[in-house]
Length: 157
Length: 108
Image (cartoon, rainbow over all chains, first blue to last red; front, side):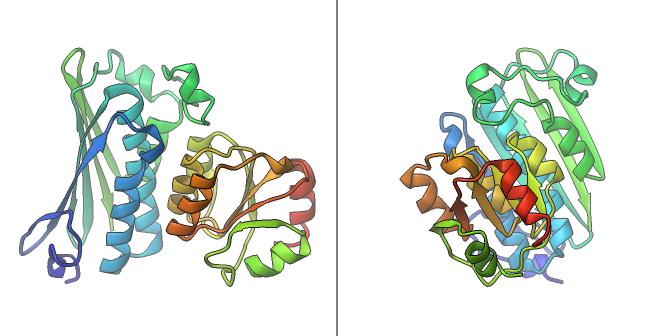
């Protein structure tokens, strides 16, 4: 229905519009902390144009924003890919950062390795990954130290 | 009540008012942005002392009805410009977070 009708004309981030899904892609700029969140805001706008319900949009945009912030704080940016199907939205965040040595520890609410300058901006409370898990139906973290991290999140509609 | 009515009632100083007919329902107070993102509900009034540019993204994504910066913490021009661009209602008040919330508890 709605997603497949969405083309590059509607939104410049559309990289492919197949019969059953639409793909949006974003480069996350690791240099600019103040612009972090731009991709999530754009995804939110696109989902709204496609007619998704507000709760689904909120889940996708909040979890993606947390991931975006993580990529900027820890990994010098990366790439975000959002595949939109009628029944689910799949968000893949991939970076070439330092990797996560202990994923279970990183998932604990309140655990953070963010530096002080980031904490003074109101981030680094150790709630990013727990929020991402809370707002999505499926979440998978693949990480190798020194190579990078890929987080895949699925929000069912 | 609407954001406009709320601003008048609390005598808030308007910085960006792109959508004041919006209904304000409930309130959330907090300064840790991840915490706010995870806990604030759509249409709530968000009271904070944070003033950096990221508050606009958080307000947009959490879909709060307006942001009130307490204790008249100074807000840079680029934050105001971004709030206007993103459709975020932004106010300041000389009152503390506690005093604002106490008043809001009877209003929204």
